[in-house]
Structures are given as structure tokens and as C-alpha cells.
Length: 190
Image (cartoon, rainbow, N blue to C red; front, side):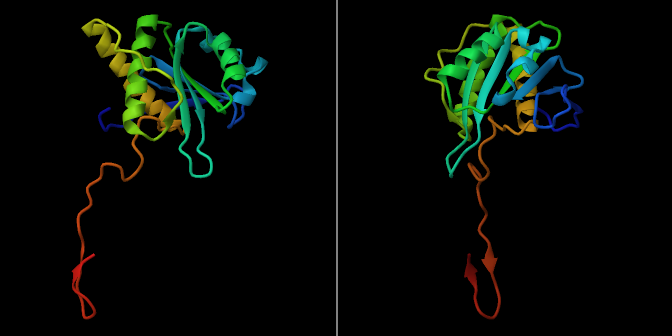
């Protein structure tokens, strides 16, 4: 996204800073809902989870290991999360991305899933738990522009919530300029 100011609204529906959090850029139709795995019971019954969604199962890195992420898409988030809760034990938090206007379709989220896996893999900050990224799905050019805009918003929201999935770790790809030490005790490159 271009470097310009943005207003991000984070709403705590239960009043808990570490509980369920809804986040969105105020001028965009994309929103995210983040919840710790421990809060996925009755308190996770939100209208946002009954929409077509792109989702991220996330865990922090432990003992020097990289954090982990599984990226998926679904039309039924609650059912999918219940299944993942029994089949995948690594994750501690979920972030689901939906449309405020309920305009996401399977085409949107299939493309977003493919793009997210591709970009997360390229960034290398998280270990991907996906077994298979699949191929790039067909999408009409005009729809692809909309989806790329939604991806930019998703990137911003994930980072704001503390999950910079698409950002390379600091120092990766940076070119360092040599520096010189001058003085009585030494002269040369450092």
C-alpha cells in the first residue's frame, strides 16, 4: 500500500484487550476478526463469522523457532475452526478476513488464499503449515484488482493485530553499507 495515513478501528466486543477483536480500516470494506483459540466457544458467535472468509491460524514462535501459520478459506468459518481445533494443535489464535458488505465470494477468497500463501512463503517470517498452495486460480482482471486491494488491507490489518505474515524478517534482503573507523588507534573498514 502507498505510504499514507490510515485510520484503523479496533473494537473489543467483550471489552477484553486480549479477547475477540474486530479491526478494519475505516474507509475499506474489508474487516478482520481476531480471537484467541481459548475464546472460540459461545462468545465467538458473531455475525462476521457467518460470511465467506479468508483465515489464518497462527502461533507465536517458541524457543527461537519461527512463528507458524496455516492459511485457508471457507464459507463456514465456525465449522472449519471446530475441525481445525481437533486436527491442528499448533495454533493459538485465528484471524478471519471478511467483507463488511458480504460481497466476498468463493472466487475472492480462493484467490486471496493462493496469494496469501505465495506472499507468506516469499516473506519467510512464518513457517507455513499448508501442505499445498495449489495453482493460481482464474480470476477476471477487474475482480483481480479488487482482490489485490483487499489483500493490501489484509496485510495492514494482520500487522496491526501483531501478525506481520507478509513482511520479511528485519535484515533480510538489506544491503549494508560499509563504515570506516578513523582515528589515532585505527583506520580501516569495520
